[in-house]
Length: 110
Length: 129
Image (cartoon, rainbow over all chains, first blue to last red; front, side, top):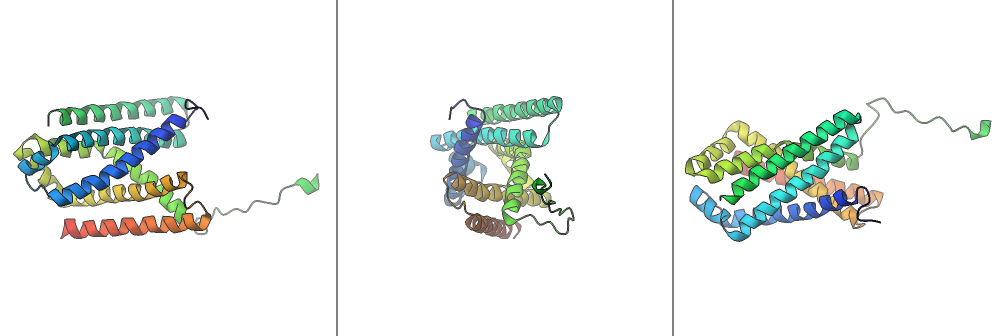
């Protein structure tokens, strides 16, 4: 099976991002339960650790990639007229790119 | 040619007679929770932005989450994450050829529902009380 074959790349992207998201959610929940940041100072001190910032940035990259494949699949399953399908896929792509730029901008200045 | 005619297909268009199997319930909820989380992205990012802006913003994010409506949304979105997480692990196990027989796929679907109910119940106890 070729790597470039239709559907292989989104399939792999969905699975790889899923594994990272599952790992991150558990790891982040455990960190929050251990550190228990209860005010702004503690929350920022927690987030500003290099490992956490990088892990959180990767989380958003994975979440938005995962949302792209999933949202794309839902649109392709239910929306059949070509014009509407292209319009909705474009809208989804722009929405997710906007979310990625927004969240990376927040994380860069933390 | 008469012998080649297929027997009439069973029709179960009576909605009271069709029941989605538990595997189908887990599958459609995976899709619904995924769409819900996708649509909630601006909400999550907005809360993150508020919480890291300054201490007033942090307090505002806390106020949003402790508002009754905020609590309802929190529980709903945490259900979506829990369902998507457990059902997703089940689908990843299928990729590894784990639990692919009909009986074990059904049993795994049952465990997905049990696990998410436990998580949501713990959360409701923690958030509401």
